[in-house]
Length: 214
Length: 190
Image (cartoon, rainbow over all chains, first blue to last red; front, top):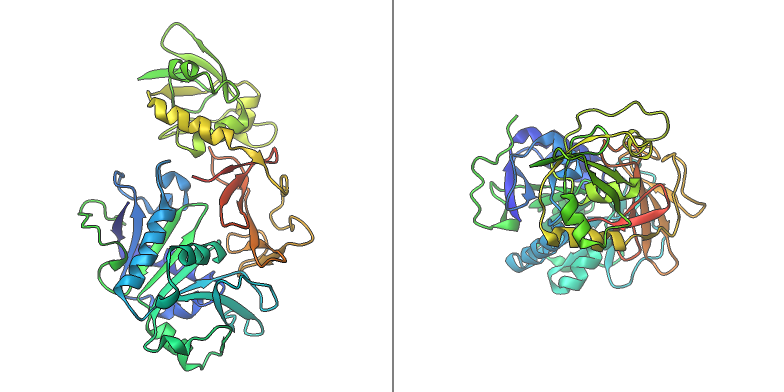
């Protein structure tokens, strides 16, 4: 798999998907202005057609996005000791949740009367099993994974409620480095990165000629 | 490049020889017969066609036209009614055929059968809609929370563009993804 940078005409599609997220994702929409947008693509691929991003025919049968995703998540923790990974989930406050993962709640961005549940991982708890568990509990339509960081990861405690003015929530939002929004049936994962390149997948690939054209 | 008939949809597929020499695809494909001019008649069951398409064994499928549909989904209708479709037949590796069989052999009953033809209707009493869009829309999922803390989700994809048939996307308690077909079976997503 290789990372291919999309041109900015894909940003509206990304923001639309982000708006549909259940937890932290919608809080980030205002931050998705600059940066760059990427997809993982097969090593051998034709030029990317934005319309086809909505179809699973984009990827051949040999595509293994799951392992690519897992490796990218693990790599993120290795490159940033203060890394925090957050997954929006479909859990409600009253739902039983696996003990193996950590959770926090926040107000629903679209319905302030409700609370949403996010799962999170910090560097100390991140291994392959934990990362796979996090992806498994992520809400699928869309799946939103937020790569952020905290200066003091201990500030984010299990079960904490982060109201909109909470300083930890503000830090999570301001520290966002990458956001992955996937719609798994279509097998496309759009990845926004605040930087000009995608550290999640530095594969040394020359993407010239594969950029999406308007 | 060879050509066969699969109704009126132009697709690339395995050669009959490759399929028949494998032998294990008898349940998935049947009645490959030569017309003597490099073209073939092929009958493929609806679910088999779904598998062929889902796993890109009908690579680069280009729809030329669909025959008039009188019942159900156009593509399945065309196959089940025996209407011929022009097919462009290309060679694929034996490993790919084995891969197809492996996928086909993984077809299992969906624990919830066919969840229904209306995505706005809950698949069952224990399912709640979780999403920012209205029930059945693209933004959200039907979610079932289990007592052990795991979740399952079903997402309707009932207007999926041809050639893939209407289906539901099912995420099982372990996080594994499946396509649920109208006959109540499901196959792993690639």
